[in-house]
Image (cartoon, rainbow, N blue to C red; front, side):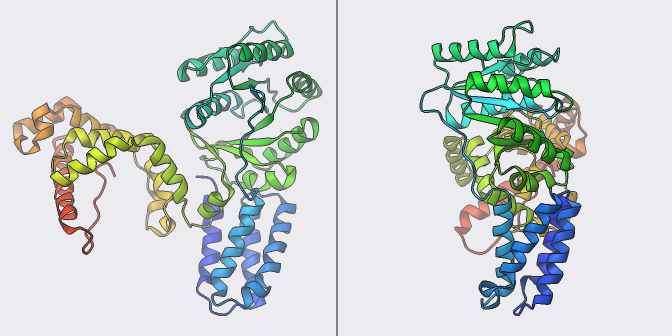
Amino acid sequence: MAFEGLADRLQGTIQKIRGKGKISEADVKEMMREVRLALLEADVNFKVVKQFVKKVSERAVGQEVMKSLTPGQQVIKVVKEELTELMGGEQSQIAVSKRPPTIIMMVGLQGAGKTTTTGKLANLLRKKHNRKPLLVAADIYRPAAIKQLETVGKQLDLPVFSLGDQVSPVEIAKQAIEKAKEEHHDYVLIDTAGRLHIDENLMGELKDIKELSNPDEIFLVVDAMTGQDAVNVAESFNEALGISGVVLTKLDGDTRGGAALSIRSVTEKPIKFVGMGEKMDALEAFHPERMASRILGMGDVLSLIEKAQANVDEEKAKELEQKMRTMSFTFDDFLEQLGQVKQMGPLDELLKMMPGANKMKGLDKLQVDDKQIVHVEAIIQSMSKKEKTNPEVINASRRKRIAKGSGTSIQEVNRLLKQFEDMKKMMKQMSGMQGKGKKKGMKFPFM
């Protein structure tokens, strides 16, 4: 994930000060020196770093810290609050027009992931906000752009408005808005043309589309991996167009996170959404406080709960709980659970959202191989109905057949059977315990 280097540095610095009963100005100065270096290394804008360090220092040597019972904890609280403020304070909501449709212009340079992000945003609006979006192909210059948006629309089963590449983008936008009104779409997402660099023609055309469509939002899509360049691009687009917010893509990649920490301060425009992966549902609303928590190693439980709520069927969860109580949990149930966990995203990312996960030994090196999950699924799918329900019937010859049918080894089949048996024993103990004492945790069969 982004911010890893920054997170490690800041968490190390915080650890030194956490338990201190007394804090001197020298302690604060030493801590701020480390924080400053960490932020600069993460490619955060120099002026932003200077301002941040100044604010934290003033508060850290002020009354609220020096006179508190736990000065170490209080300093951490100050750092978290200022980090949250730096990224925008509260989450910035997406606009809703009083007279539908709500019009969103998607702008940005080529290669930032604008077309894919347009699709992801439409998908999020439909799934999370129950909206009916219309995608508009207004990039007539890049040969594959219209085709790409149509492919995205088909993949998501969302309508795409296109007039080909011989009609002006302004006319495309005009006709798309008329069509959206006729067909009662409540959001129109206009995928505009990008360039390899900012030029007058690009800005001129975008201004024309803005003037005609009078958008409720102008979202600038920038690649988080370009670091300080992303901030410069944001500044240029904001000056020319007056953007309303930023969508940061590739925040899950090997990035230092400086863009996410600088953009808000430099442009005074909020980060609205962040792209956290390649899948079409890998776009999340940006929560400054939750991101600050993750950077400081405090976890992000709220996002974890939201992911679970979005991907776990409540009725099935109740049914599963009943099966666990009555010990009738089968391999079919296990397969279903595996599918629901996979939908929530990469397991290593989910684990990092848990508080204290940064202190778990080896978690930073943990990589849950998708192939292992595929192997587990293949093994279960190679079992007969009887074997899935009563694994005790699986003798040596059956194990051999299952391994052959799933393209795995007998050892892998044996390991899964043993772990499934251990899991059932643990369920039995837990249902009998009713909260008394603690039992040893189980390992996932694919970790």
